[in-house]
Length: 87
Image 1 (cartoon, rainbow, N blue to C red):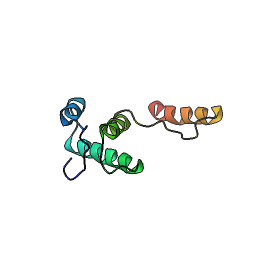
Image 2 (cartoon, helix red, strand yellow):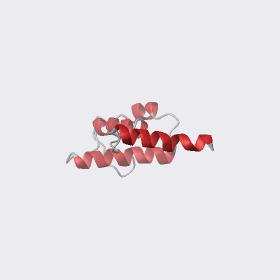
Image 3 (cartoon, rainbow, N blue to C red):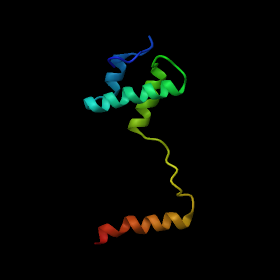
Image 4 (cartoon, helix red, strand yellow):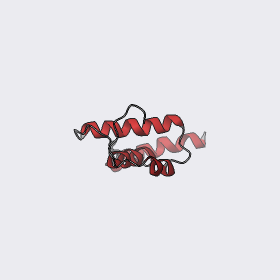
């Protein structure tokens, strides 16, 4: 949080309560991700909205679109992933 411009609505205690078990690196990643989101939204300060988005992105992740739409691709990946347990 040091050196990052925070909006008045950012509640550090709330963030701390929601990030129990995060390492220092994970917390730094959270703040950096929130800063990136704020920059994309043309904001000069990180608001709680950006922190919430960053926290969701880090803990849940984004929807991945890796070309898994076709049944043929899904079947191929299933065989690939199922091989190592058999070996």
